[in-house]
Amino acid sequence: MSAFPVHPDGVDADWLNDSLEGTEWLAEGPVESVSWEAIGTGQVGDSVRFHLTHTGGAQSTLAAKFPAADHASRSTAALLQLYTKEVRFYADIAPQLAMRVPEALVAEVGEDGSEFILLFEDLGPARGGNQIAGCTIEDARAAIRQAAAIHAPSWHNGAMLTADWLQRSEAIDAQVRTLYPQAQTVFAERYADMLEPEYMVLCDALAAHPQLFSHAENARPQCIVHGDFRLDNFLFDVKGGAEPIAVLDWQTVTAGKAMTDIGYFLGCGIGDDLRRAHEDELLALYLEEMAARGVALTREDIWTDYRLGALHGVTTAVFSAAFVERTPRGDANFLSMARGACALALAHDSLTALKETA
Figure 1 (tube, rainbow, N blue to C red):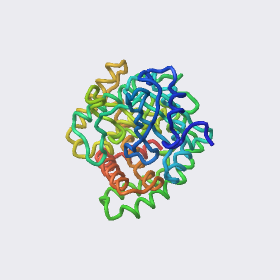
Figure 2 (figure 1 turned 120 degrees about the horizontal axis):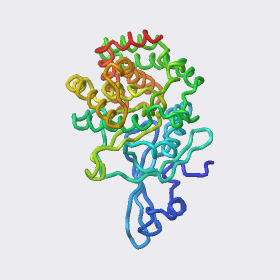
Figure 3 (figure 1 turned 90 degrees about the horizontal axis):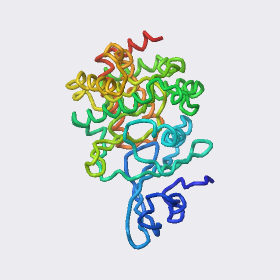
Figure 4 (figure 1 turned 30 degrees about the vertical axis):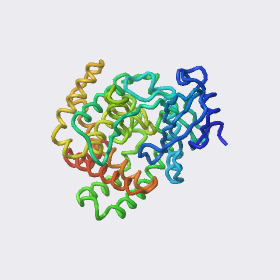
């Protein structure tokens, strides 16, 4: 048994009053009752909104995140230490960066990494990003600005990047290398009649190059990397339009290469049509935002890493499809991710870039 609730039903008025004692969140008085509803579309964690009734009748809301109810998703999260990473990110790293995230009021994780709770401020009303529906160029620009707000404050920040919990483990990388061909087999069988043949050829070829999961290739990080920087993990028009965007779901946070996020976002994040129309503009915007925050980069500096970043979208779609709960939306989501990422990877011959790094 954990010392904290690991399901929304475990959160009651007494626990909230104890956890929030002395904070502004009880300014309306002690909590007398609480109810909840599911929100979001995550498959590795379950998110909810709590409706609180305070003494005297005032009402407020909070958001929270818990372990996935699905056993396969929860097991994958424990294997990759996804819950531990997200909790530690909110506790240790988020205050040092410049992007907008919800304020974490409670952040607890169990010793084995399989149970956790995150209790947040509620950023609603807001417009959730939708991987399948896509986004506007204005949304894409807002996301690119947030990427720079993550990367620049952490750029070559040794104290931040060397945190023990943030490091990619060689043992975990080795497990992923072992599991990835199995994941590709599942992915190929499941989506053979849905994914374009040239994209599946790329997926098959990528499975034969395990250096993408090499510990050595990630031993010289540049900055903090979100790792799953795509539309489903953003809120737009936060708090009724008071703020443009917030970035959620930090389970895949790591120390790595900045272009892992940018190649991922422009590939699997926004889709091929928007990427082809605005790729140069969005890359230029990223460089401008980084320069404004004190990190001077050229397109030449980022180009090889950008090509490799596209492959992160392919591998994430393949691995996730095989090892998290299968749902109709999940199938559509992973196909969307794979299509966009494969299109970008083929456009810039990312597989050759990967082979050249071997």
